Image 1 (spheres, rainbow, N blue to C red):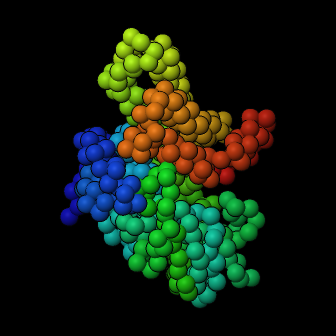
Image 2: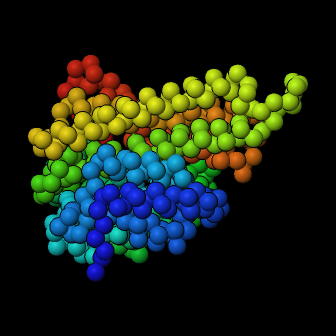
Image 3: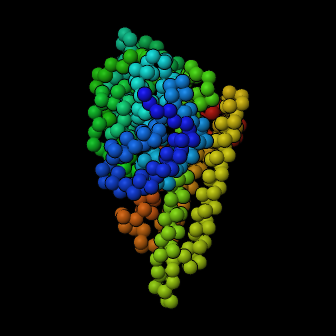
Length: 392
């Protein structure tokens, strides 16, 4: 029987595991995936089960606490936090499926999900489901996943399950299947998020029953606060913890270096921390992080209070959460670059955490949830367009 863990216990477990995660960041980067035994420790800690309903033995961790857990993990290693956040979608997807189908896919609440939402696959409508073929990229965590998701365009005149799509008017379905039904391609040769195992994955003529297909436009069948939001919002919100933890680690690394490194030129020799430019840079970085972090937690807590109290969230709050999330990612790039520049030549070596953090910061900003297109939609909302962005 799975050990019951409260949300508070899982957060404490993440904090306790953080030092080991930090010490193994280089190992994960070298393997281009999370080490299997580290994944098992994260499972034991309960990090992947946070979105499972209490009726399943899960904690139904509130969204503000999920952001905090991801932030703790990101301070240790960005790749781990990134993969854990994506892996936690298992509980959310299970809540959107019919109960018996969900339990077929997720017999264990510590199961990990990976995959990509854009419809790079093709799904042919057949009796009882779909025949799916496709190749998807950026499958973060697919090397240790138990279930894989893929977005597909429907290639049939027969009506699909969903009458709408976050990708426009095209018929799109999101299929879920055991990870063993996909081929993992060894394609992840990236300098950022190096340990995330974000390989391509593919399948051919895979039958997926209709009961294992997600309708991203439909509400869940559950009434708990965690499942009242649009599924795209619940998927994206905890990702705000990644840039916050990354920026915190970058500042801490610079401060540690500044207290040890002697600058000999110009004379007289002095500690790096005594230089006015270093003091200015650290103050600037702390203010950038502090403002972004306050923005994230204020808006996410406001959203969570609204969904708890009223069962729905205002358009203004959804907009503000989206802005805070993207702002946090932009801030992480600023802070990582500032700390890298302030450290000077010591930061250019691949062994420097500041080098890894800067590469990670650039990479996380390439995600489809944080690009300028989403920011443009949020701007339209500010200017009076009442239609919510696709990803908030």
